[in-house]
Image (cartoon, rainbow over all chains, first blue to last red; front, top):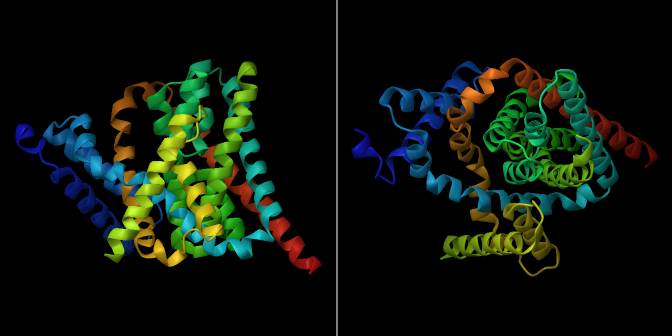
Length: 230
Length: 118
């Protein structure tokens, strides 16, 4: 089975697309936020890989085309951001302050709780970049001496959490302004959250992609300066 | 040809982003440089929005699917995370909600204030 599937350039991509489509169907049918298509698809694939005894490495290699598209797809977020920029320009201070407040409170919380729980430095440093996009977070974590796999996992889980809880949190906190929604999604849950914000409104998606960039850069600057005190 | 030309442009910006990422020693990924470059190109009128819009919208619409494979990577570090599952899970969950709430509420308050001045 393994020998048959691993050289195929299409099987794992097809599996991923099927799992995602199935996840979308399930979410439409039951309309329950926890039934997130990304999470459902990943859970299904993990089950399939474990059952068929296929190593994750083989799966990841087979999905190469999907990770290949990640950079161009992320870059294209600039298009809707450009389209919304005229409206956004007036609100730039509000957006920047929101992103800064969110980033600082997130890092502060993680640092304080990590110290209280007595996590060792390597683990704490792996957790700190959890709200920013994988590519920035991963290199930052390595720079500071963190564990790459833990950082990746925390970043992806954070994104999934924002993606799942975001719409519900917006209702709970009465975040009705699409600009505020975008800032919240982008700052707390980077690109994965942004992919959900895009579905709420074009403005929320545009602000979210801008916020995730600013949050990422701010986290790099803050952690690089404060690394010696962690 | 239209889609081919658009894809070509988008891949060109991806390449330029990678180039900057390779040349500049900051932990900033290629996609962020690419985003900034594409925005700048549109802003300064080097590109018109119709030249990238159709293919770009398609790529953005499939963005969610692209995150399935990274999440499956959880399989690899499950053992390490399981050891500290409670504390890591709690920190990740609470900090995400906190960050979402603080950034969203601060922005909403400031946006409203500015509206009031007008």
